Image (cartoon, rainbow, N blue to C red; front, top):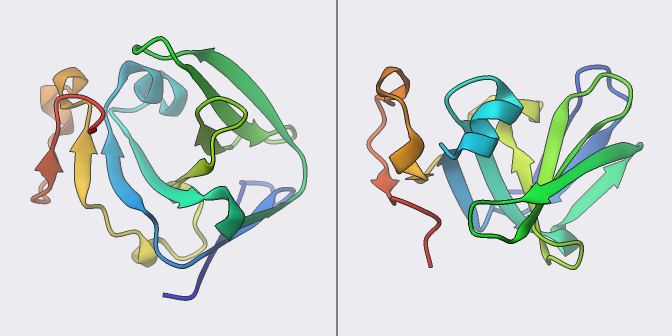
Length: 135
């Protein structure tokens, strides 16, 4: 795969991600449920060096279930959530798949934090599942 492109609802923030994601899937943690207003987020994880961003994002940081900081980045104009990361020195970006220009390039491989998944949010896809964050 070449370059995945995407951006926010208003177009003020754009990104390009080179290559294939390191991980991709559905996250059912309570933070993702609250941030998306639905049962899960669709994420793809890339090395930061493989992602370029234009435009300005704001961020919101809180402690995750495991006690580590988690940061979510969103467009300061339209509020679209675009990226996530661990601590500021984290070498990876999570890109939220709903922001892709071409949604067909998203290929989920797993579902994480399934212990928080609601019965009404069962996928018809067959995915590897983990009770929490793997590893």
